[in-house]
Image (cartoon, rainbow, N blue to C red; front, side, top):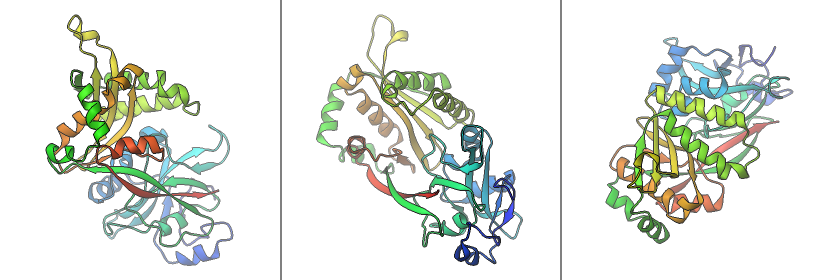
Amino acid sequence: MPPTADRPASSPVCPGAADGARFLSYSPLHFTRHPDRAAWAALHAAAPQATVYSAAWWLDAVTAGAWGAVVLPDAAGGYAAALPVPLQRRWRGFGPMEMHQPFFTQQLGVLSQVDATPDAAPFLAALPAGLRAYGQLHYANRVVAPPVGFQLRERLTHHLDLKPSYAELAKGFHQNHRRNLKKAVNLSIGLDSAPTAAAEVIALFRRTKGAELPEVKPRHYQLLQRLTDALAAHDALTVWTARAPSPIDAAHQPLLAGGIFARDERQLIYLLGSVSDAGRAQGAMHAVIDAVLRQEAGTARLLDFEGSMVPSVARFYAGFGAQPVPYTAFARP
């Protein structure tokens, strides 16, 4: 049966994986290529692991609608728990389907109404037989015992709790960050929620850091712009910018740095940041993050910096008081 067809979890879940099949032999878990939208919305609203990443509209945007799920039905006909399964053709439109982790989507894991730290292992075991899979789970997910054929590794993101006041948060800034903020004191900081503002930050990234990343193709930038359009349509987009002051023509102040953030009731997610050479010299990116903290301090949100495994980037986040948080990546070749 092809990977995109619904199949019960009682069928063998990996080629030759008798242990995995026995593990779920009487489980109601099953894979569906077309999750029920109302059931998904209700689960997303109730599950503590839900983020913008797992909203149906986000998954639609980053997969062009090609996603399914391993679901655990509840007694009312909805979903008690589910694992989103983004799908793509292996060779850009050709070949068999595979599960992948979409660009700009750091974590996708099990959503559960009944367990704050759900075990993802049964959901992974219920993926269609023969489906090559790679994914990154939500940091609150566990994998008690990896199913046969799956490989795991730990990755890190950085979180900053925004419940304290700004004065309390600022006490955790590293000395180097304080020095950079003094250099940035005269910069003009702006807040916007329009896709055009996001497009300007994306363009700066392409000219600067993006030029060093040949693996990031034009199609990925197009995807990011579609994603920011979707964020704006769902009132979930925030863009912060830092510009050089220009008393002559304020409308044409050059962009020195910018950050694109996705937001919901629980989290603020740092999707993309960009800074020019001039902005780096003036501490502009430090000023952008500082402005976010001033705005969001005292809220119930968690700031997720979306990484990083790169030591220099991790130090930048840690310099604002962010703490490393592990999450699990899995693969079935």
